[in-house]
Amino acid sequence: MKTLPMFARAAPALLATLLLFAPPALAETAAETTVEQAWRYELRALGSRAGEVVMTLGGPRKFGARLLRSVRIEARTDGMAARLFPAVADGTSWIDGEWLPVRADWTGSINADKREIRYKYRGNRAKGEYKKGGQVLLSFDDKASDRTVDTVSVITWVMSRAMTPGAEYKQPYFDGRRFFDMVAKVGDSKEISLPVGLREAYPVSVTMTHGKIRYHMVIWVGVHDRVPYKTAFDFKPLGGLEMVLVSLR
Image 1 (cartoon, rainbow, N blue to C red):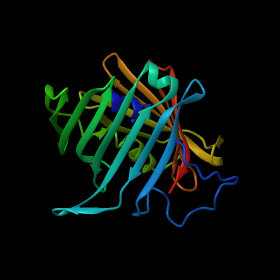
Image 2: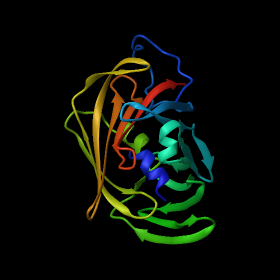
Image 3: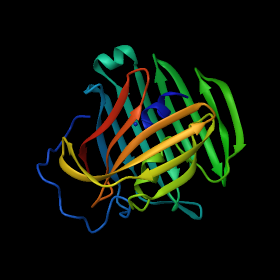
Image 4: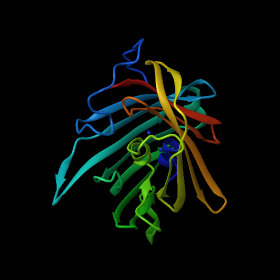
């Protein structure tokens, strides 16, 4: 399925409460609090609005003997971008205390062509299927070198890492069809301008490779609050794409 990997590489706005100044450091960062959080982003292509993305990190819920949290990405293109690439995506991955997924349920459509991906993760194994138009196109049952991050959980996994400039993190990445080798490198903090005001953030360069296939994105994680303020990623149909935070709760 292409829809969700594209938005998250890149993976899932209006309704903004515009703030002029950065808030003081929180008692708990976005990676520490157990309260549900939601971030609304404007999707931009070539500097213009191309759609919106809402990412929600749920609070802990008990599933059997485990406490899991849901990560949900809802995304859609609109305006001129929707004419070129009409797409809607809604994906949820359930993550454990290590910020790694144990289950995934993603749906999306491109040109009203519906796609579905449902997976379960057991250790370093991913098992599930990919459907298009109700028909199974791919049944997947394979192992990675280690437990894997997936398209929906990659941003929250990155924000949960220790933001030490120069630090490098490696983990397999799964896009719903294949495993990638993923490397995330933390850069020096910089001040960035956003609709919610000026924020100091670490740029984390994330590269996924599988043979000749390569995905790349940069996730800007808040220095004081670990909020994922911005994600810039490669996306050939619309050139480069950016997810820029416009509101949070």
